[in-house]
Image (tube, rainbow, N blue to C red; front, side, top):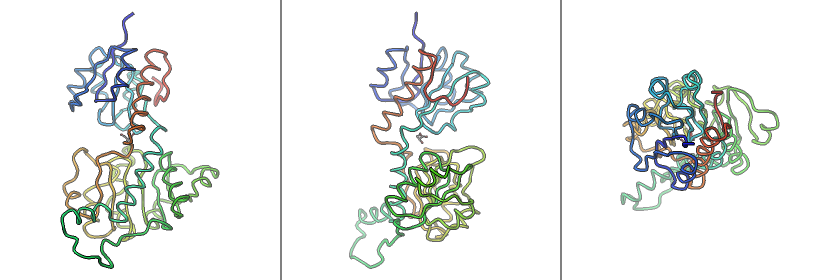
Length: 323
Ligand code: DGY
């Protein structure tokens, strides 16, 4: 019997490709070319499965051109690149890669928070540029992290990881807002107190965004929300671009309406709003929150396991829909 055909839409660890090759006819993209939607659709002809990252969009227009497709396995926990309704309507299974990246991503959220609050990137650029001539009492004086109020918007697994780091590691007072409240047990474990969104914005010394992107969370942080935050506050986004109105944030940073920001994700990435590139009090990183080698390997293996689980054994590990 011939093996099912799968497309790996982006470059991936060679050992993961080898695992896939044991079960499938694999077409890979080890040059990591950035394909247009048209090119992706053309390469998906005759394929039953596709291994995607957060950059490949699977929607009704693409599905109409890929009648053989049965599963798209995302090497990401976020799946706003999938139109789940269109996939379900066409009977295409969607899977993501939850859990394996939780701790690594929470670590990075904290790294960005600390870098922004303590002005690590800004001061490093200053030093490299040869501008450091003397010690001075307020040189790059930032905000304290320990003991401060940590606000978390979105309290899934990664949000809980951030909360635990803040409460247990840094003695922070943790408040959060989420679509639904955590159980009392989880709230106690995270030492986190549920508040309304307004209170979260007003009270947080550092606000970390960890909510999924959807039309409902589009620009959840815009000019009006930024205006409610403390002028000393830090904003961190490790969720998805599009949750923050980047133009409004750049303006708020320039006007010092908030003190600093750390951003790992951007609306329209890999493009970054030019105004953000021009403000000093923001740390910008290229969507790397989950990028430790072991975690990225675990994410890739989970996406591969979903392809193998579904196309070979009829049972995916982490399905998002009922195809
Ligand atoms: C995720 O898993 O959603 C990360 O943002 C990587 O894309």
